[in-house]
Image 1 (cartoon, rainbow, N blue to C red):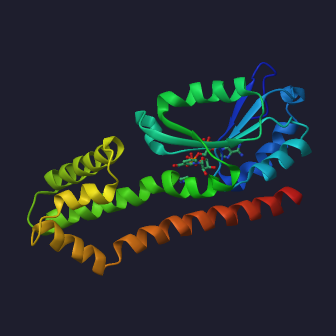
Image 2 (cartoon, rainbow, N blue to C red; image 1 turned 135 degrees about the horizontal axis):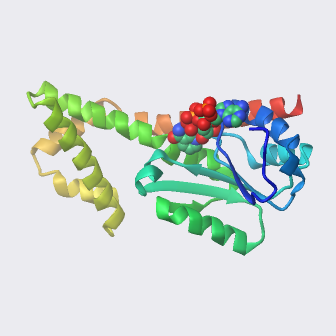
Length: 225
Ligand SMILES: NC(=O)C1=CN([C@@H]2O[C@H](COP(=O)(O)OP(=O)(O)OC[C@H]3O[C@@H](n4cnc5c(N)ncnc54)[C@H](OP(=O)(O)O)[C@@H]3O)[C@@H](O)[C@H]2O)C=CC1
Ligand SMILES: O=C(O)[C@@H]1CCC=N1
């Protein structure tokens, strides 16, 4: 990775947060590093824009930075990309959004919300996949074949997401419509409430956000070392 062509005007930094400092150090020594007008896009979880900007300025690599957070569903063009930047030139942010929009939803957020969006949409895919696995296990426990159970769980999750994305009503109302008095859904929802389902998901987003904050402070320490 010693070479950074000077013609390369947009560079994605997609290494693990712990690798970022050493990668920046190596970029500084690259022949093309003198180009200070290029746009840097970091997708690293946790590392704040101020830490990244410090690494860029230490390496005299310019200061045009976009901090972005995609999720793995971008592979299927139904992902989320959140980003924050202090770049004032609208043509640059428009170009970035044009690049990202085919991948799914692309939303600009304040820097202070990046760790929370990383937790919710970046890591949230894993939380939902775990829920999907568990739903499928539930079906298998009740005698369904594994393949059918997994297929029904995934399709049901997609259906719930499509309903939530297209309906005018909030998810709570959509849920009520499935919950007949004395019916099967209420029986299942009661079991979820007893297991603190909602609370556990809220805890998961909070824990992932806090981890992002920790990664930010540790990379700041590293960038000063
Ligand atoms: N996984 C996810 O869902 C998401 C991840 N991210 C972020 O993306 C980043 C990468 O994560 P992920 O893709 O999961 O990790 P991977 O381990 O899959 O990929 C890391 C990449 O970095 C390369 N790499 C490692 N060390 C160096 C180095 N010293 N110099 C140059 N390249 C290096 C690796 O190359 P090689 O394979 O050749 O070793 C590999 O291509 C992380 O910062 C993560 O926070 C952001 C959003 C979502
Ligand atoms: O945990 C991770 O490495 C990544 C960051 C965003 C989602 N997962």
